Image (cartoon, rainbow, N blue to C red; front, side, top):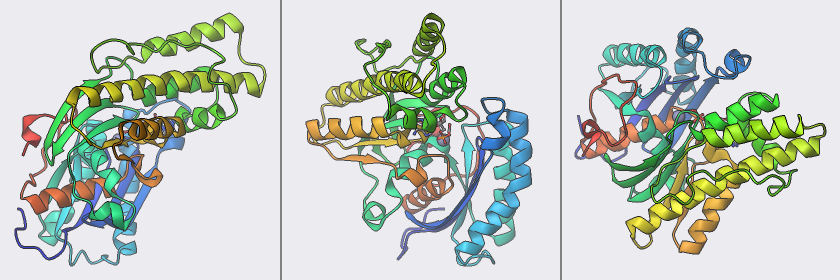
Amino acid sequence: MGGATRSRAPRVLAIESSCDETAAAVVEGGQVYSSVVASQIEVHARFGGVVPELASRHHLGAVVEVVEQALTRAGHAELVELDAVAVTEGPGLVGALLVGVMVARGLAAAAGLPLVGVHHMEGHLFSTSLGDAARESRAFGPHLALLVSGGHTEIVHVRGLGRYERLGATRDDAVGEAYDKVAKMLGIGYPGGPIIDDLSREGDPEAIAFPRAMIDSPDLDFSFSGLKTAVLTELEKRGEPTSRRALADVCASFQAAVVDVLVAKVARAHARLNERGLPIHVAGGVAANRGLRAGLARLGNELGVPFEAAPLAYCGDNAAMIGAAAAARLQAGLAHAVDVHSNRALDDPRLGA
Ligand code: KG4
Ligand code: ZN
């Protein structure tokens, strides 16, 4: 499937439907021609989390229009001049994944194009290469990636395309999940990440000394469920915050605990790899967090290594990142057919180079 002598990067229609965003995009390598995201946040907000059955149903309702919009905005409504169709094959909610896969399969067959399966987290790794010409032109080189979202918290050593080693991961809640659960306890809305992040700016990060779980353990793993319980205990002890300032103090203190642990573990991973100049990247929904971006930027400065955060527009789930990963795989002759899976790790040998 790989293109050996292309003059330009592959032009790809990509579809993403692994969780609660129905997304489609047309990219040429890392250059984004169109990126459409229909979020189901309102559908799931009253449950405080994603309800799988509702997610599949809403993907079905949205996917055709989202794909049409992406194609039309990119000037490819007729499906001509495309090189491939790409789709997220996992991990994710199986019913949700299947909606994207069905549509992608149908379009690829109709247009006579190859269909490329992409691992969702590999997509997130590529999100740091989207957004401007300088990023797009950069090769997908070795780096240390922190992947943080509602479903994942992992530190990955990226050696090159398809060569990933997971150095550490959460043992319980994903960091975004902890944000969402704490926001639910505080009754401030869903998804909790952006709300807590905003409120944190008004609060004192040292107001409450929340635990930094596993910060001193020699491994590169995380645990966030204890922190969530600590917030609950604090609320029970002091009562619900009665002023905006008191609420902001809880948020800022929680966020400081999260950021301290994430940054400390990335620093430890970097030291362990001991590769001079190895860049640090952060991607995934929680990469939008101001405190985390600032903390990692500071770490990059201290270590004298480049730091790259995914552009805000591509932190959350989107299809442009899936298209960019597929384009890179096509160019390298490493594209594979779709193989739907709900829970395969990023360093699964089937993804390998
Ligand atoms: O990557 P994403 O859109 O979907 C998943 O694959 O999970 O990530 C969503 C998660 C949610 O838990 C949300 O609360 C969190 O990302 N999030 C944030 C921020 N923006 C979104 N967490 C902390 N700070 C933010 N600014
Ligand atoms: Zn994601």
